[in-house]
Amino acid sequence: MDDRFNQTMSIVYIPILEQNELRGIIILNSPVSGTERVIGKINAYMFYTIIFSVVIALVISFLLSKMQVKRINRLRKATKTVTQGNYDIQLTSGQLDEIDDLTTDFNQMVQALARSKAEINRQEKRRRQFIADVSHEMRTPLTTISGLSEGLVNDLIPADQFPRSLALIEKEAKRLTKLVNENLDYERIISNKVHLQQTSFKVLPFLNTIKDQMLPLVKETGNEIKIDAPESLQIYADYDRLTQIVINVVKNSIQFTKKGTITLQATSNYKETLLTITDTGIGMDPAELTQIWERFYKADLSRTDTKYGEYGIGLTIVKQLVEQHHGRIEVKSKRGEGTTFSLYFPAPSVQ
Image 1 (cartoon, one colour):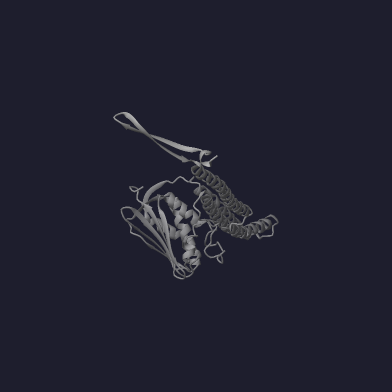
Image 2 (cartoon, one colour; image 1 turned 60 degrees about the horizontal axis):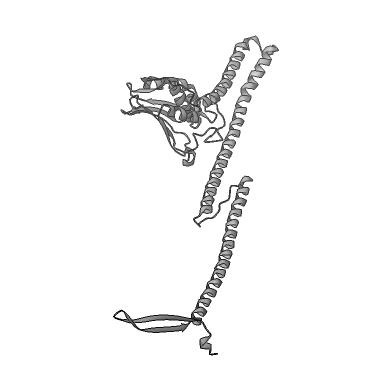
């Protein structure tokens, strides 16, 4: 049989009409084997394409997951390193995805922890220095009190030396009390448990009183103290706490000034009253100016004698008290030229 009659054909009939009457039919036929071969090839191509795409997708997914797991493991190892106390680690990032955001947060956390650790170490070093200073400071009066008490009890001190010995015991006891009270006062002030009794009073008599109180220490160090304030100038503050503020600053100046001048000056405008304490002492470097308000900090560790100064918390108390007056304190200093403390106290109308 002829192969032409043994194959699937596609037949199309087209009628020929004339005045709605069928005049003939056009018959078109064509074998469909060629079309079937094309469709088969297309199906095969689609099948292989799908298989290839699935394989490529699996490979890409595997590589991406492996890369993400690697990044997560790197972050996990870095976290473990941090838990062991090593903060000198920073992870690189740059793919702008969720893991990258997590890496950025991790780096910021490590930086914050490193800063906190450094601050703790600084405070611990100053605390140890403070304890050493306090221990040294306590040892002398305790030794004096113990020795004199033992001498008095055992009649080892002549009767004519009794008043002097008792006076020395009282002086050293007050010195110990002052040391304890200063630390207790700091805790009250830092916790905002101090209630201020603010009133208006004249500055000049106040500064003269400070001068009289500090004059023995000023003369002992070979210094001179000067007052410069208008007679009518007033300040709005808590008298006792302002006394504590100015005395602490003046003592700081005395501690770092020898055979120089300490000047207490006062000026004002309608907004605030300004007190400045200027000395001609050793001064400070710029790096020290941001640290002097920190507890236990001492600008010059060689000056461990607190006979004239404080125990490393005086200026911390000063700053807290000034701020509780809604004021502010500034300091300018240059090594070898001296230091100026500026204390600003707002007028009652401003507060």
